[in-house]
Amino acid sequence: MSARRGGAPVTLGPPQRRAVLALLLLARSQAVPVAVIRDRLWPTGAPATAIDAIQVHVHHLRRRLREHTPAGAPSAELVSYPGHSREQASYALRVDAEAVDALAFQRLADRGRELEGLRDLEGALRMCVAAQSHWRGEPLADLEPTPYVRAIRQGLVDLCQDVRTRAARLRMRTGAFSDAALDLQQLNLEHPGNDVIVELLSTALFLTGRRERALALLNEEVARCERQYARVPEQLLRQRELILSDALEEEW
Image (cartoon, rainbow, N blue to C red; front, side, top):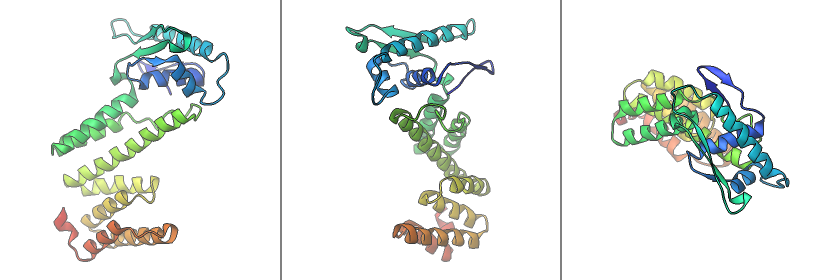
């Protein structure tokens, strides 16, 4: 969890304060009750001082936002909404979503999926590439792995894998098989055992003249599935038959 202004890092404070900031940013300008913030920061055994601590974090974040908003730029505003009790009070962080990598990444990924559905392959690929430009590594890696943080992290990691896989598929559909093969080889190293990635990679290898390598990949994966999981990967078996019969090229 980090922030920058004009390329220079901004100090955000201790991990718990950064967690409050992440939670409010990911709420997309919607108000988040103090009770929800407390439960997400302390999923078990919240201290009696939890709400006081949240208020202190909000105070420091609000001051930091004022200090680092450039003159004339749209201001990020941390708004308080009183409730009938301290637990019912809430906070909303109003900020340009394009200034938040995670939100821009999600928006571009969604737009890429829409364009692919409209058969605008070049536009969809541009959106996937643009989305990846916002990826800075494992999200929220410096925060305590509470259930909330783990869920957010895993959701973004899964989405990144999907975006990269779709980008490789789009490259293949536009004829850039060699580029797709390079991307898929890296994905296969990072996510071993993913049938979708293996199938796409074997296709890219076959269509770039590496038929034997494609078959070896499929044979290895089929054997691994049968050995480790007692599972028959039907899709990979079909893929192997298509390559053996040289019928795969017709599908592309």
